[in-house]
Length: 563
Image 1 (cartoon, one colour):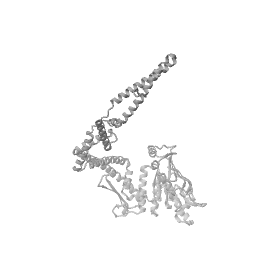
Image 2 (cartoon, rainbow, N blue to C red):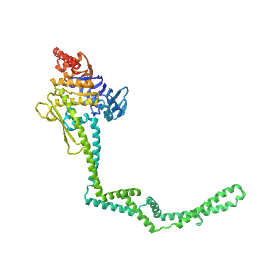
Image 3 (spheres, helix red, strand yellow):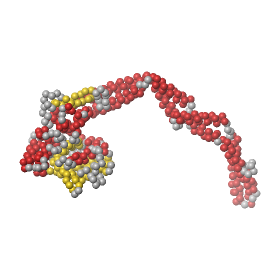
Image 4 (cartoon, helix red, strand yellow):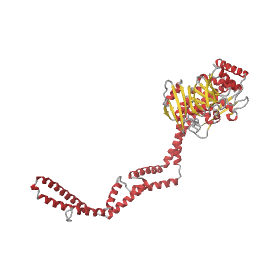
């Protein structure tokens, strides 16, 4: 259950901390005192949207912290599945809001807003002031039924979802094949042209790189030859000025004096090696020049081949390997077209089988839903009678949708009659806003018992009700509070009188600022707040006595009839 709430710098709230207790926690206060802000702080933990004015004026951030004591095994297992570990059976959820961004944490570790929302959803459930309106929509009605029977319905829904996915894939495959013959022939001719162009090129991997080298050599042949002739003149023995001729003369000159000094012999050997190297170099250079020829026809063929390969690259791939990969893909497409009739029949047969599977699983899901709808109907009727619907009739009608969906083919509608002799009709055509609110309360109580959510929050569940109905709603809230922690914001004294713990939310001036505070009420203070709810601004002695009597009767009622 929620044992501690800390809110700081949120709208009108400066800094408040609240210790909630088990059972029914009632929050009351004047209109505009900040009850909605307090609820909004909890909504932030559930992933609520951040608005520009959410941070208190003059503050740099807003902070909301919720500390839960987890006493429910199911909630503990769900949290563990989300990767949330309990510390002494507790979990702390916090969200810090800064300018345009927020930081969410679970037990002090940073997490995403969606992770925070998933964890909070295991621990509490909020019934907002206008949520009952969603009961008018078929999707919400189906969601409630599925939540009630989730133990068997969820696995069945998963099978339907997978079958629907397969069915849609088969539909897309068949649609892609459903082309006219003229279009297929055009595509076939185009594929044959592309494949023919690639196959006629007889591609060899790496061929383009070798041709590029050869082309560079051939296209620069004249320059290469002229340069080599110059080099041969500079290093050879024929020009009279070549390095080879000069080195040979130097060898001969040095040989005349080496016999006079042993050290000169080493220099002579080195010079002899230089002469030998130059001689080898010139011999290789001469051989290269003599073998080098410029064949116009070879140059033309290389250039033509390169143009072809580059043209194919521009069309089909950056490299020859890419072109060959493209070729294989186009071959597969051509094969598919050539065996079109066979593939079309295979696709039709696959669609038929997938539809049969989808029909079976959708029908199984529908039967399970109908099974649970009977018990849910009885539960709702019981809850409605508890909430002063005396001659109520309620049923869940099933119709089949025209199309399959990933949630089956069921179209359901909640139908009700609140007056004797009237036939059942859809909710939207019968009930008022206050009645819708009571119906949602009955449903919430049923789902809460089934889901074992520890903390339920009701925001002004009393909208549009009074008198005997208000008393019945208060009794229902007290009954729910026996097995759950309930936080309820209310304006009705009948509901407030049932409180196990009573809090007052009030707004007052602090210097030049307006702030919201919350504090627990006990004994006479709680009775005085009931008197305010009963009598308005002026609390007379008679109103106070009525409030005290209401409080005493509520406690007696809780201790006897509601046990």
